[in-house]
Image 1 (spheres, rainbow, N blue to C red):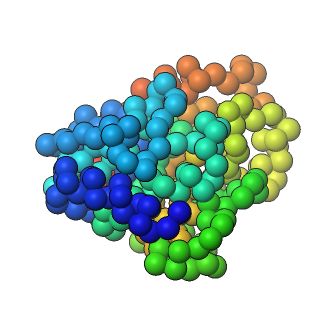
Image 2: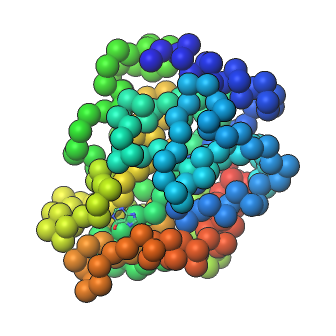
Length: 271
Ligand code: HPA
């Protein structure tokens, strides 16, 4: 898909919200309630956006919300797209390219993840300093549109050091425990095996999850700075005796939602 493909979505969105957003935020499982803190919200259903994708996960709403948070114009993706839903990696690049096309200058990616690092606890956050994706193709596989980004591109500073600095500072006084570590992508939808988690730990992963990396890679390709924040919903498989359930992930998210939302708003204010 080339630039003109995304421009169709952007034109439609500009016809509804003429003022360009400054910051885009992808709301992961625990951050759904952040949407309630958006002032003067204008909501657009994914279904109505030409050339966009449609959510299939029950707990993901499937809409773009434009508005202001802490005085900044934002656009939030309430509901994201995952590889396990059946999309290929190339399709997963669409939303971020549309957000970039709207003119945002920073992208905040949030997600729920399992804690692999034994020093972490459920309910903690982790700022993503880097990621590991050993599986499958790149979202940038296939023909390259040079208007979007270069064929070969650097990803050594994909998680922007300046945004990390802001997030680190905002953590103080937030009432949250905020770690920094490496996000390890697994395709899902099954949670991992205990043996996979031991392997991930050996390889350098601190948290494990099923999203975020394609969005971060797409942003790196088109020169959009990224901040990634994982909410650690559970200890990863095999660490504790009880099996992992989606109910547990959702309940842990509910417990932290308000503080997490305030934290992200503080970050938005400083960007
Ligand atoms: N593994 C993968 N994804 C997740 C997990 C997990 O343990 N918890 C929440 N999302």
